[in-house]
Image (cartoon, rainbow, N blue to C red; front, side):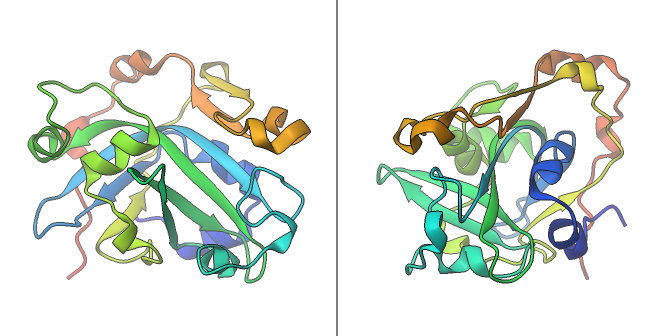
Length: 211
């Protein structure tokens, strides 16, 4: 099985996980038998309590943020501007409110479903957290989903991203966080098209369906 286990999200440093997720495959089966997936190409880490960009800054617990304080390996999904569903992965142990926003993927499975949901004629990247969730059928109703289950999950297909292809920089759209807006918590593949040249057998990226 290629599925990533819960321990991966709990036992590893969140910044390390945010970078290591590049090249991992995010799967969804949010509509019956409509499997979709993409290779993760961009992430952002949010580390409460000291990170002013985090919803849980200062260990603030609200109806929305309480899920961030649970143990890693579950989904934290919120609505941005009343439109965009933002998919985050909760990391670390209980009562440590860390999370990683998935910002971009390269679709590799279930393209007809992704195209139907997004209304686009062709896709190379789901470049942006809002279009990403739209393509994978992920919505706020999936908030709290166990990412080791059969609705939304991640797999490791041993796609290795060379270090010289990974850029690290400040997160996007967090100017409200003051000096924390410049923290180097964003990780992204600099040259996404190179993924087509490293001999990935996309036909082998199939969902590990739980019975």
